[in-house]
Length: 88
Image 1 (spheres, rainbow, N blue to C red):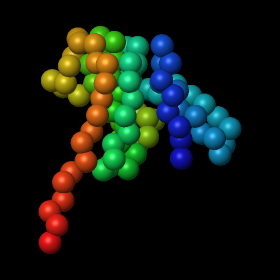
Image 2 (image 1 turned 180 degrees about the vertical axis):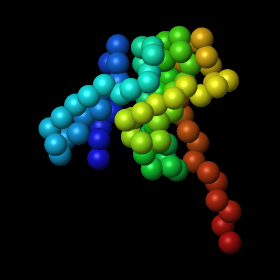
Image 3 (image 1 turned 90 degrees about the vertical axis):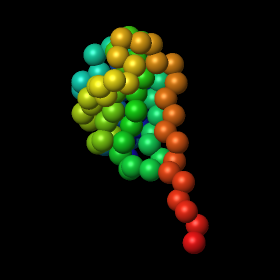
Image 4 (image 1 turned 135 degrees about the vertical axis):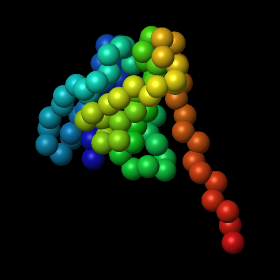
């Protein structure tokens, strides 16, 4: 399983098992925060300095800006609330 690291300039994907690292593709701005989605495996959210919020569904290997989610705004915190399942 890869580890994502946000620096002041980039998001880096570290594969500990293979001993490799690479920059995450598609984030066009400085990252400010990262959050793993507790419901969808492999989904990661990244807030940026001026580019809004980006989402990756493959553990950071590819990303895309989420339309309408803070574009041209500084995002300092990202949190994904887990779904509340009804108890029977």
